[in-house]
Length: 399
Ligand SMILES: *Cc1c(COP(=O)(O)O)cnc(C)c1O
Image 1 (cartoon, rainbow, N blue to C red):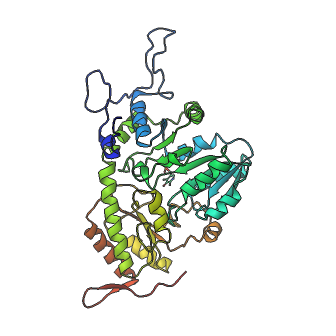
Image 2 (cartoon, rainbow, N blue to C red):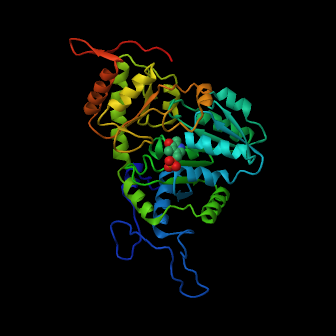
């Protein structure tokens, strides 16, 4: 048997069958392809239906995601839009209650329209999930670790239960936070999708999404929607994503190493940090049991919205932006930014702290990042510096 290549190799080893042997797969920046004859359409005819640059990307993604079929579309939310069109009128759908803000927004919209019957539950509570899934549940949408609360969903246990008892229920998993490097969701789920805007591309210069499956039937249905709606990823963006992918493993390794350092530092000065790579995380063991790493997103509370604002705005190297996965480090207050589309009442119900700060760590020097945070934390008054240079938290009140 031929040994399978490691993902880090597959990321840079991108064979293509260009007629000139171009080292980099060529960009087919064209919408149409001429036909040999009126009846002979050839492999490609119109870029909405297919384009060689997108095919190149999709075959690489399928291999990375251990999928039989992968599709590149024009954003992470497009993935969800495509998948949600497979839901039939009135189908019951279960979704996590700490999902990405945009996911929550689209699913809630479909629910209010009467297209789906949505039940939001805490999917990190495995017992509750097992109790909630019934024969009428047609889809379940999961994400782990959740963002920004960094809660871990027991994907293997939920999958095992559903596959045994309700094999027709389609398990959909959003793997944006872990990437194919750390988790192969298709071992547990029927459909995997990721916002490639984040780590897969890594440079915050394109929007893209990827959907993958091992089922021919699901693949055909997904492709039908992609072709019918025209959300396939544009050739140039496909080409850029192919380029971004090459450095995924080295970027993400560095980002994770930096995050571990920063998480430990924040914890050492007395803050409560949410990061699955910390032994203090209540689901540290669970996370480790099915993921190959801890990712590069963490969050912490300050006890004061004002202080959180000063810290967020007081950093220099960290960009104040929504999103994550970029080579640059980012800082945000999710309730004011990425999760503002969830209304305040719902945020409260889900224990989403208004003062929460989220850090998405990039590839800069970790000590520079820590110094930057130190300056901002001191400025906010949340921490003080002793005469020996030791940083310590003054006090954190629970909001
Ligand atoms: C960003 C994100 C999305 C949406 O992706 P876009 O590319 O921004 O449309 C979906 N899920 C998660 C977990 C995300 O972080």
